[in-house]
Length: 113
Image (cartoon, rainbow, N blue to C red):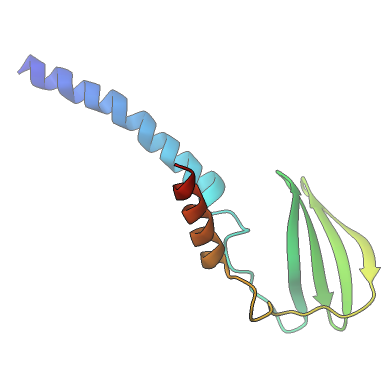
């Protein structure tokens, strides 16, 4: 009976850190707002977002008929400037989607091994 208890404790000590590490990775990187779809309203649309650092993002936003460049940092959002011109709101038909880019990266990684 004591050997069963010993192996149960060993399995617990091995599996618990693995599960906690996987939870951390999923919560930190897997559910990132960059991977979730951006909902657009009728008057305000996020055209594009580009991460500049771990907690800094620059966004191109359309409000009405005007475009603004916004900077997002730690707890602050700043209007960097109003941008002149027009920008396509939909990706070009020939540009790869998210799933195609991920599949390409996986194939590249498999070829390296």
